[in-house]
Length: 141
Image 1 (cartoon, rainbow, N blue to C red):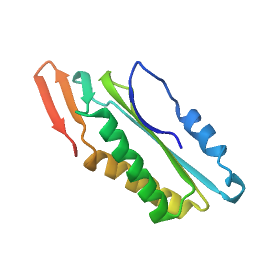
Image 2: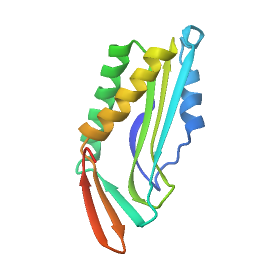
Image 3: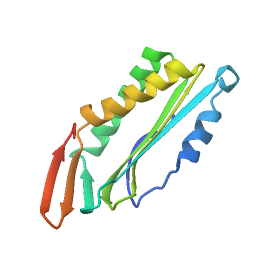
Image 4: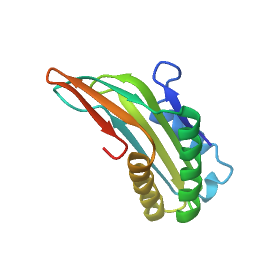
């Protein structure tokens, strides 16, 4: 299981890394779908964004529990998720997700729920810096 919160300059992952990890699952022969998602910084006016969490270890523990709960709820084989913290610019990757399941329906639903829960339930703070000042967005934004 690859589920972690990572400082931007500490480790680098790509979607292919998550897919590769998922394909190592011992029940890959019972699987028929992998869905992936990459969230990145948007905005023409944003000079940069700083993404933080007050307690990286606690946020990672919550992320791991969230992933396990969603795997069980949708009966998918495995979910991999990497969420970055640090300073980012337009186009930089913030979040990677991969979901391995038997069928596309439950695999897609598990991916959608994981994205929404991470956005709304984990304790992240975004500071978007532009020529107009800094805008603070707490979990859910």
